Image (tube, rainbow, N blue to C red; front, top):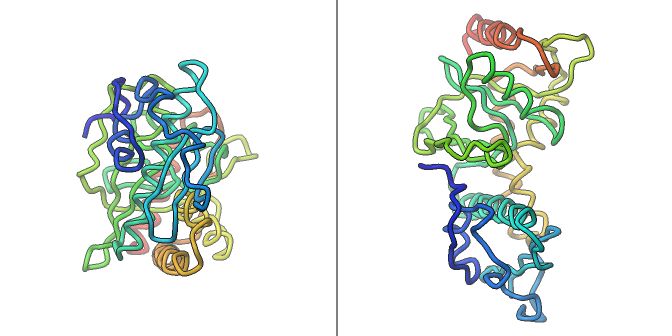
Length: 285
């Protein structure tokens, strides 16, 4: 799959075109005339999701989604923000619908460090340093093209969990338009770490309580789905909550409750990650 951030005009007439628009979202992918105006929204429709730039409503539970702009973009920079939100909304809606259909996939808020043994997920709050840790990993010879989200696949009948790399907005911010995202390739899950900031001046692995570990994993695994799930009806929310809790319990039982505490600069990240992997290997995980 090529990077979705290609600059081209894409027709947009509601959610029917949202998937295609999301796959090709870029600064030039949308103009204000391609959004449904707010006054065209049915008065009785229910608000499902809203950002500073976009609003999603549906006429009734189970009905189609409608998307409109909440304000007219004034310049190219604002169109970039609209495109970013469309991309995130597209993926979030796809994730919610997949879970509602019974699919065992989940879009997670994380960094994905690629190693010879598989992928290590870094779960952390926004601003905690996922992108910085991933950039350091690349600078020190590692591979990481997904620093904001990854797709977790729990469908393997033998219980293995696989990861798929997902395009992230930072690729646009950093001018990485030439990056490819091989979403069809499966990467085995090799480890899961909560992410925090180190106060010791160096990278380190810290043991967490099971409760702390579960809470961090659960927040990160619910992050993208929450964009829509929190505004769905209770009947629609219940299966989503149960499925994500099931996924979280599975992951937190499989890996020891640990956090990776990182600094902004330094060269010891690969060594710390290798020590973590060796510890897992010694425990047969």
